Image 1 (cartoon, rainbow, N blue to C red):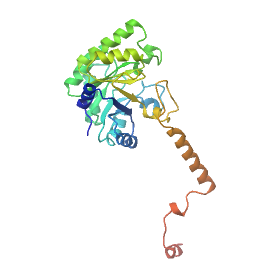
Image 2: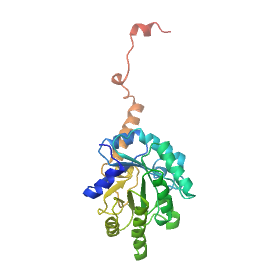
Image 3: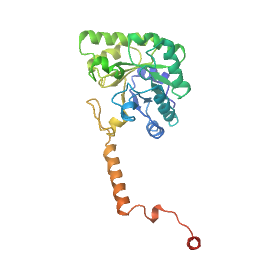
Image 4: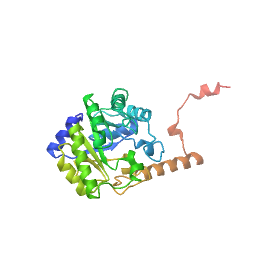
Length: 274
C-alpha cells in the first residue's frame, strides 16, 4: 500500500515504528522501496556522500531536483521526501514556497523537509498553505554547523533542551507532519516525542522516537564513515570491494571474459571478411 503523510500520522496513533532511509539515484531507490520502507528521503547529505563536499552547505536546488527526479522514478510505495537545501528557504517566505513547489512540481517529491524551529515557523505555514506537506528537523541541523562550531550533540544544557521542546511544539502548530530529531540525548528525544502528536524520527536520538532514519551508505558500510549512532546492518562495502578487485584481476590475467560471456557469429561470415 502506498505510504502517505496520513500513514505517518496513523502510525504514531497506533504506536507503530516508522522507517526511513536516504536514496540519491533510481537504482538504489527502487531497491530500498522494494523492502517495505515507509519513506525515502533525498537528503542534502548527497553533497557529502555523492558529490564529495565537506558538508551540505554547497548543495543547490539544481542538485536536489536532479537527484529527486531520479529517485522518484524508482519509488512506488514509499513516501518520497526531499530536503530543501541551504538558502532555498532562508531568504524569504516567497522563495521558500517557490522552491518547495519546484521540488514537488519538477522533481515529483511528495513532501519536503527543512531545518529549524521557531525561526522557520512562517515559512512552514506558507508552504503548508500551498498544499505541500512539510517535515521538520531539529537538534543537530547540518545547515547550521558554522553556528554550532561543527557536528556536535545538541540539547545537553537545560535552556537548550527547553528550547528544543518549544521548537517542536511550534513547528507542530505550524503544520509539519513529522520531525527529524538529530543528535540529541535519548531522554530528551523521549520528552519531545511525548510533547507532540506527530511522529518523531530519530537519527542519533535513541530508541524512544516514533521512527528512525539513516543514510543508506552508512548503514551498509559503503561510505567509509560510521558515526556513533549508525549500525552496519550489512558490510556491502567489503563485498563490493572484493568483487571489483576480482574484476580487475581477471581482466588483467585474461580469465574474463570467456566464451560464456561472448556472442557467436557464423564462421563462414567471418571467412568472407577482409
